[in-house]
Length: 555
Image (cartoon, rainbow, N blue to C red; front, side, top):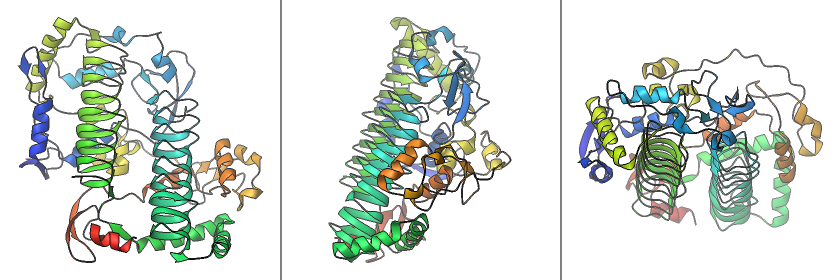
């Protein structure tokens, strides 16, 4: 094991033998010359922060297509440099990314030149693939009839959510898999008709519950397995259970009372030191069905990864984020689907052997390209013959080595997103001055010009009229105006739940506040004192157990 010193934070960090071997294994050879990828100069935290600075999941802007002048919904701010077009226009045959190709200038830095290429190549307004009626989404693929969701695949009729996989009728939820009819749920799998349910699997018809396994009809319960008709962890007869639940769920005010009880209940529940299920040789949190994944978070069905944040069916990766559906062999990559041997890339799909590329689909053997479709042997969007491609790549890497650019991810100053509108602010929050010192942009808050509400969401869904969808509402917490969408009203009627009196942003902030910090600390089991590598800091208030005592308590 070797110690590095982060060039951004100054903190020391470990570089493991696995990382050294991985970097050696993926180091490429071009034109007979092998180019070793240098050891990272940033700590894992700062590498993750840098990737997150290039991702916006929550904020949408209005633009017009550069091609057609039609209105666009985009993840890119109003001052973006790049031409923006719709996803349909991007995939059309009416343009070709090669028309923006250029010679590499060996007198100038690599990143400076690719930054200029970013400014001229049209980019899709959102990062999506093969969706239907999902204009107000990003980071989505193979979804239908979804609104304001992100980072999700194979979903239908979902609203205001993130990180969903194979879900339908899910609203105000995150990290949900193979589930249906959910409201305000977090980290659940194979759940049905659940409201305010967290860290659970195979649960149905449950409300305000945390850490359930194979349960149904439970209300205000935690740490249960194989139970039904439980209320505050007390076993009841069905009739009594139904009576008590009805008293808590008829109105919005009563639901708020239940939510506050739930917060108190969660504070006293038992936590397993990490949430790792059916895994072997894994560390991190929220891992499932994976092997040899070290310091990874929110991963399923993955193998041989380290420092990967959010992945589905991934293998052989280091320092990547939001990798999906059989992506493999990657280093310092953000946002891919079905890729192999791609490195230092942003938002590439179904591609192989790419280096320093962005928004490319169906490509292979490309270097420093943006916005290409189905291309091979391209450099800076210029087509090369196969026998000319490798010598040119060799020369460019040698040039990058001289400027200490080889082996580095896209710098913060290249991100089109202000720091406070990027995913980095969610996981690594900073104030304006600190963000500016890192070379990031910042979007100042606009003056609040909230209008008086035309209507207040009724206490009961049965009292809610269709006309509310045309009304201007005001958040009961922040005063921010918002509107109810037609599919949203339909969903609430379907599950018999009153409409929220909070705006979507406030609901989202409450949801993500559930998430634990990404990190591993030394602490003791609160039952036996066993030393643990835990995702809960030693000074946290949660009651944390080792595997043995957790299984004893939760059974």
